[in-house]
Length: 317
Ligand code: TXA
Ligand code: MG
Image (cartoon, rainbow, N blue to C red; front, side, top):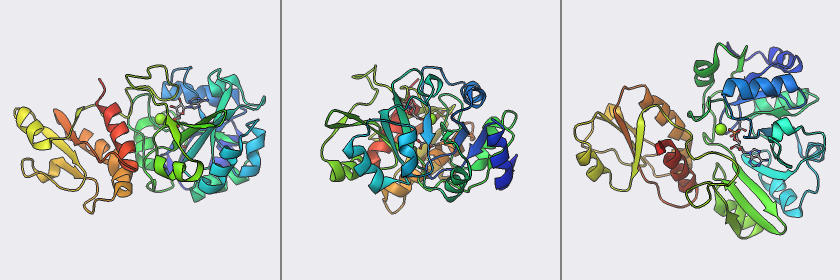
């Protein structure tokens, strides 16, 4: 059920149940971090492997010391600039955080979401919320309550309605090693904005070079339709001429494909706008019974890096 019933959401969470929660990035599947029952339910309905840890959502900066310890100065510096917002920090976990949440790791992922509904709910509860993105394992993350309901209507009692997610891609994940700052996931805050605050950031993302990097697996954010990413759309369309093709492009539609099969992510060439439309575009094209989705490679800067990362994972077999 989709509803704006805030009191019901609070009651369900206090009763160790799992609900769909709006945030500024994507919707989450939220539960009480101290409830073994709620956390098991999250892993189960998401079909998430038990080795993949959850993000903890807190209500304000003063709650940070209840979930993490040995917090570096640079972490506070970033938190003060970007929270509430789409920045997740990996920090040594507080003993009160279970191994179930962190999948046995000694770090915990934590952020303050910047969404009025999520913030009000967190403020009304006396526990933080674990909330992975509200999609089944490897599928596209939802940016509307309706998509969460389509994925999980038989498994969760409530999706709290919070409108379309403003950022539309997940948070940027940052960790620390001694004095170094490390990027673990490209996300809604561009890496350049982090570097402007704390200097050079090392990049440690799972790909062919770093198969062991923690965090998301290579195949992720996948529509059911196959995806190819290219920097030459016209050549790829010609090569695939016998197929029913959908397109994802940055600014300019192609004259080679019917417009109804195309998703232009930002006519004015704004990467932030493009990122906010990406998942919705993949969701939509996935409903059109296509043989193939061809996506244009985005400029390799700012949120273009995040979009390219997601497209690359969507294209992974
Ligand atoms: O924007 C977001 O971060 C959304 C909204 C709902 O807050 N949440 C989200 O959660 O994207 P999820 O679970 O889909 O992605 C969290 C990622 C996972 O890939 C997980 O492996 C990684 O964070 N992660 C969590 N805790 C970690 C840890 N202690 N060490 C390394 N990676 C961690
Ligand atoms: Mg996810």
